[in-house]
Length: 106
Image (cartoon, rainbow, N blue to C red; front, side):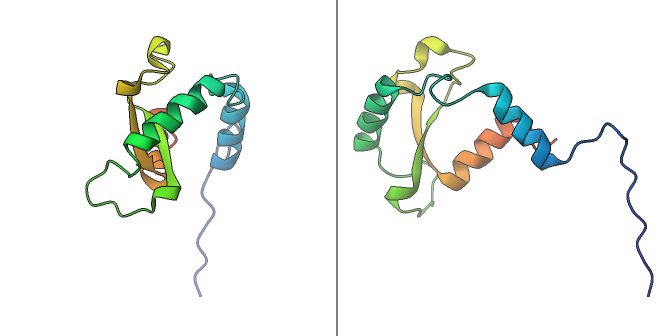
């Protein structure tokens, strides 16, 4: 039976899991990034108004949703607690959006 040869990886190449772990260490804790008591209050207000994922056709239960900033806090810190800058996404859609924003797929 043929054996597939190993892929060549440069010595500096790091596995995806290691790159993500290093990125998480670099970006700090959720409190350091601005997700404090004020955020929890605004998040609760938003979920009371918009309890379901905003992606058309998504049937994710209401207890499995996240609140996402449309314009990132990094780009517009003054809009961190702005209700018009928020949308509700299920975990799957939020992860996809976050992955694109942080370029983990490249």
